[in-house]
Image (tube, rainbow, N blue to C red):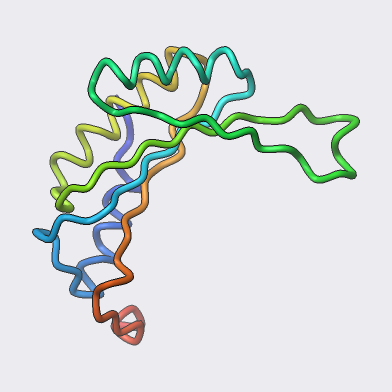
Amino acid sequence: MHDHEGDDALFEIFRKLEIDFSKPREVNFYLAFTDQTDAENAVRDMAKIDFPGEIFRHDPPWWKRLFVKPSWVVSTTKDMPLDAAEIKRLTTSFASIASRHHGDYDGWEACVSDDNIDGSKLDS
């Protein structure tokens, strides 16, 4: 089972900022792999649960390229409300897919740019 500490931390920040959880918004999920084939296999598994994934090559900085291979990031996006139970269920699913293909689930983010955010609320 995946640890939902990161999910809980992000939801706590959103609560402090008084983000409207019921409003549908763009939510992005990320998985990371060291092998392109593993990333491609993960995308196939994600499609089975109706989450089409995109693969991006992430090259190391020029000064590391002799020693470090590129990595592969898989992302998927869905417009949805910020329902904690659903996000945690998806986190568990994506972590399982990543693990099955020798990768890591790298978390999620949500677009809150349309909300009226008062950053001073994070100070409390």
